[in-house]
Image (cartoon, rainbow, N blue to C red; front, top):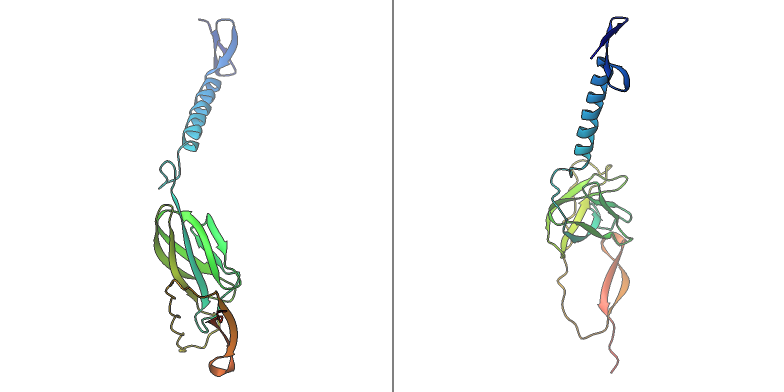
Length: 183
């Protein structure tokens, strides 16, 4: 092998190939190693993800903690990937990864609230109510107690009819009463 010098760099003759510098060879080796590390890292899953994931559903309602009225269009999320908006009644259904999860609800003008739950594979879990406190509520004023969670019952009667009647302080309050059965 012949060694040539040109401007302080050592050149090596490599058979039929043109002479290459040591620095050029070193650059190729370093770039090759970087490519291997980059490809190897991109193939690994994010932390806490193993294989195929199992999913379940979370249902609930988002309410104003001062009035117990629904908050329509509240953003409900489990992590940052699984999000949904509450409907006009504050109700939501959210598909999420099974396991221990934190459900977060937020809406403009309200503080953020969370609820911890365990989501079972291929099952639906109800977290009841997530109650958001308005950002401008008077200091020291207590929030209302959450409404009772209705217990489902089998009923031979027709579907309930929604009516509006005045509630406390003259505000309208929706109530459900069974419709009369025709005999």
